[in-house]
Each structure stands twice: as structure tokens, then as C-alpha cells.
Image 1 (cartoon, rainbow, N blue to C red):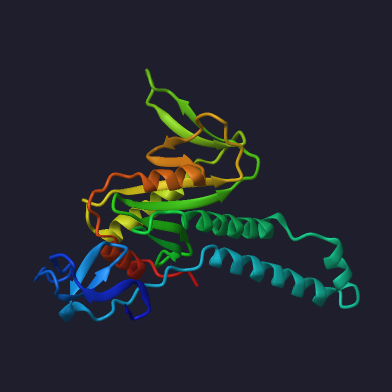
Image 2: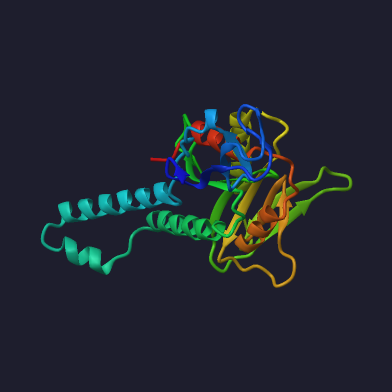
Length: 269
């Protein structure tokens, strides 16, 4: 049987002796307990009440809502100013670039979320998390046995991300991010800020937190291409999944960290 609708939990008689993940009591072979498939751990009967799984969020949800809000506002304005030909004006004109950018962002987050479904079953993913006290959000947070990954999805179709370095010998080394030849270092600063928020929520220096800029539909070279800018990894979806999947097991308690971050960083609404 499964418990509380949580698909990866099964109440059963243990084939082998174990220890309750929550209270630490020893459980002999044959004991009635709850086996947690994803974590490959067990809980004793006393701790067997179903654990509520926090909401993972909807990838791209807030960006898509903002796109629809701006689109509707423009339509209302044009129809109000031109009652007879408003529909024709809308049909013959495009939304402003600033409005379309929100739709592109939502699509990028949705695309990356789909790719993240390829991660191992012992990882957990949070999407579109709100940073309290701000209007900002974090696109994706992945919790693995190795680390916490803070991921900002960017969709720059046909443009190449590159590392630009100045100084390094006499002058201090200064790194910057270029996308299609334009300086986009502010994106790195944004991820660094998100990493700081996650570190504060965790309050545990033993858990590595890795910031990532993941570019979708970009003009990546056939060989190489990924790099790091001021501690932030810059790469593409397939490589991101590979790095997360192959991370060294550092014993991160995935379920506990996931729950802590879900509480500190609620879904963006």
C-alpha cells in the first residue's frame, strides 16, 4: 500500500534490518515499517504518518501570468481608445518586445523543467519559487544527494554565450558574460543573489549550493562551450542534467532540504 498519496512510500515487512530515518530506532528484519523508495530509507510505524510532500510549483507560471497580464492590458487599452477598429489594430500589430519577452521566458522555463524530469529518482525539483520581500523569483531549484542547484533558465535563440576576461597579470582579473557579443553580466549577478537567498534559507554551510545559468536554444559550439563566471556555471540543459546526475554523493538529506526550501521559498503566485 502507498501512504498519503505519496507514490514512493510503501508499508511493508522489512526483508532486512534497518534504522528509522526520523527517530533512529533499530528495526529488525520482519518488522512492520514504511519503505521510502526514492531515498532508499525506512520509517518505523510510530513515524509512519504520511509526510506531506510540499508543492513543487509550476515551471514558468509567474512569467506566463505576467505575459497574459501585459497582453490583456494592451488589448483593453487599444479597444478602449478605438472601439470600432480596435480588433483590426490588434490583428495587424504585434505585442511589444517587452511583452513577448515574458512569453519566451515562460517557454524556456517549461522546456528546462521537461529536461529535468530525466534526473535520477532520488532528486527533488522546485519550480518558480518566490523570494519573499521582492518581486523576484527563482526558476528552478534541484536538490540532490550531492548539492543544491539554483538554476536560472534563459532562452537566447541562436546566440552564443561566452566568457570575457580582462586583466589577470598586472591588473585584477575581471570576468564578464557575453551573449551574442553583448554584455549580460547582470544575469550572473542575479544568480549570485539567488544563491545567497538559498544559502540563507538552508542555514547549513555543509550543503554545497551551486548557481547555474542554463541557456536554451543557444548557439553552443560542438566542442566545449560551458564555462564559469564568478562562480556561476554557464551551460546547456543536457550538460546540466549530466552534471547533477553524476555529482558525488555527499549525503545531503534530500527530503529534509527540499521541505526546508519549499517552506522558505513558496511558489510564485
